[in-house]
Amino acid sequence: MKLIIKDENTLQSLQEAFSAEFPYLKIEFFSKLHKPGTASGLKFKLDATKTIGECRTIHTEGDWEITPEMTVNELEQGLGSVYGLGAQVFRKTANNNWIETINTDGWSLKEHNAESEALLQVRKDRLG
Image 1 (spheres, rainbow, N blue to C red):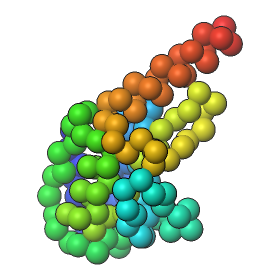
Image 2: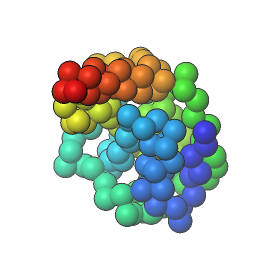
Image 3: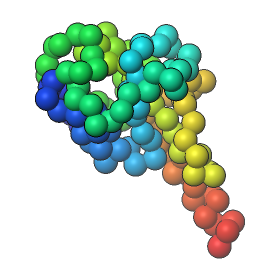
């Protein structure tokens, strides 16, 4: 899949494209970049209705190719270093909450998505 990075697009458009490909994951954007394995402070979370141009520090435009084999760390750090976008991936839990993937940044997007899908299926099976 490709994320289209243009100043006039909204953060929400990136979120929707990402979640369409990985339905058990979501991506949030922050005004500060974070180091691998660390959390993004929620006070720095950006409003998804903002345009990409309002939020980033590097104004390179292009299509960011995301593959299921890409790790969370590669995605987050790549968006930061190439486009100046602070990003954090979250995974849906069995209780339908969202958790940051900081302890598993080395997992692929495919692995995270599959893990959440499996946990939610187990929960569904238990609840009947």
